[in-house]
Length: 236
Image 1 (cartoon, one colour):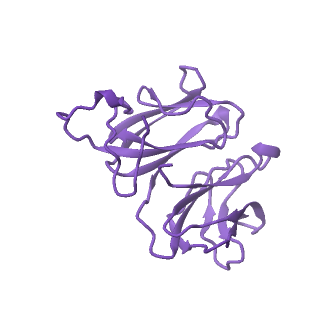
Image 2 (spheres, one colour):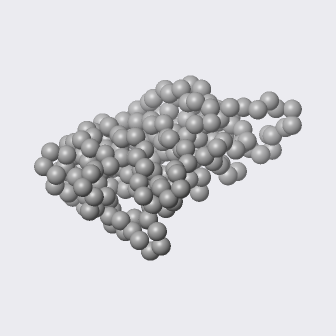
Image 3 (cartoon, helix red, strand yellow):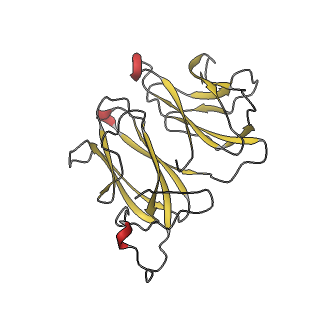
């Protein structure tokens, strides 16, 4: 069954525990159930495959690896218990209880190293941007990267400034790109202004909503080194 979520409402896919409910369980006598939308993002710098559970149901795909994102999934509103484990393991590495509001989108980040793994839940602002605009949020998920800022290359003003680990900005409105135009997004050291990571060739489409997050370890190199990633808030 495909889970779906839109900016105006979450689709009438009812849930069981997470809750997920097979289509065969739908019945016209059911009362409407309030649901929320959930993204899950693997931002923990580890080669370990992980599972994320909501209550007793696995929310993640079979190979949920570093850099993966799933969602929006439909989930019961209200108090939900979240757990992250190694793939196939029943042992929780970290847990979180969170009260999800009905018809609101959330992004759950799995962050920090495997030995110190953490869960960060953020509420998503899915209000449609104005004509000609897009929206961007910045989240610092690099445990040793220090305070970081987000900048559109060539702009004198940063979109987000001085965000320590696990800190985040609001969704900032920016001009959408047009035609073949793209921009480069810079992750900057908030103290010295040095560029720590870039995302080149980004199209910021009109009416779209994005999250940029810093990830990885400044003390590491290669895929686990400090880098940045962007995702679109979408039900696709």
